[in-house]
Image (tube, rainbow, N blue to C red; front, side, top):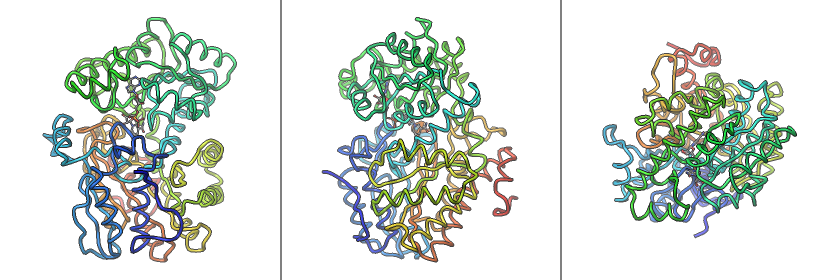
Length: 542
Ligand code: NAD
């Protein structure tokens, strides 16, 4: 079945808040957006938007019937009830993939998933806020820019980055590196994905083997020209080969779906087709081989680090998967602690907005709003220019924009005005990634190495969701295991449908003061003093 969100001003629900959420749900399953829409899989290994086809039909029906004073309850991708609440309450609340802590392991999870009792929701897949590769692109671009600032005088020109994985998140890496002037070699196990990456111009060239990839990279580095090179193979084979051959890239990371050793990572020593067969016929053996291969890959990353490469983990839990076998794995830093935390500590985070009309012109109008409102914010203005020339819309037109605390509130209010005055063709949904200051507890990623050691405290995302529900965000969700897998993260999602009403104005100010402000409180509480000054006078710190 082909799924695509409706466009235009005509709606099939009782109001725009319900319609907006319905369009976002359907949009995550649009074939332009989702990795495997036929399996309801949106991205990130097996991150799903609904538990099964029957559950999807149930959610669609429930949203179409939902009144303006009711709240729909979603339990791991299935609508379970609509309750009478009130117009200012969220229209949808959800909890995804949770298990009580002592049961929170992949084997327990897979058993319950097989019985149809739960689903893996990743972050924005289950939260219906996924917008395709653009959603991760600016974050990846900012990470690579921070790598360049920290180690290479502000540019990756003449530098070679080695990584792996061209999946939904991973395919943001080539453009993020080349926009920073660098050369990138991406190892990918799935030959079909590689072919597609060439067709979609994600990679400019495919190498036959590691030697050829290295030669192409060296030549491009010498010329100082950006280049994205795809390399068929397995990271657990190619990375050690680089060590052995004395081929030491400037930067090494990876975005294989290592968070899930069964359905994400591909073990070495097998063709991709053989790996799929083993996954189906002998899952325990598959997991064993995956973990062994990850250990080999991490050892090679440590060796490359010893030889002078800048090495970091890119948020897929690779280090923790092998920590028992290789305790030194944590000599490799995580990307948030190393590069992104200073942004989050100012309340700067991955805001995104979606034109529910389906009109690209709405997004381009809002790009100009950003430039008009924040001319002094060089990073966002530079990003908007890059996005306009390099980003193609997938599904409903959308934009990611990392904005700070005050900017998010001001921009949301301007979006409301644009809807009110008809500058945009229909309401706009404002949402965000879960990689945000107060929305994520993930001790191997977002909350790794906090000054007070509170990395594993998971109260904050729960408080974030409670506050967003109190303030009337249209959709509020709590999620488990996104990014790094079951047992390793708790996170909260939120979306507001901006409909241009006077009531929406007050709601937007409340929601974004709470949503972003709680992140600043969390960081301040953890010992990052700068977070308090970013909050100005909007929050009463205790
Ligand atoms: P995906 O499942 O869409 O793609 C993973 C890709 O890696 C696939 O193309 C697969 O063929 C390839 N692969 C797997 N094992 C390999 C190996 N050993 N060698 C070479 N290629 C291999 O996943 P995705 O959406 O791209 O996400 C990648 C990872 O990043 C996941 O673990 C995800 O949880 C994590 N993630 C990171 C961020 C971030 O901000 N950095 C955000 C969300 C998720």
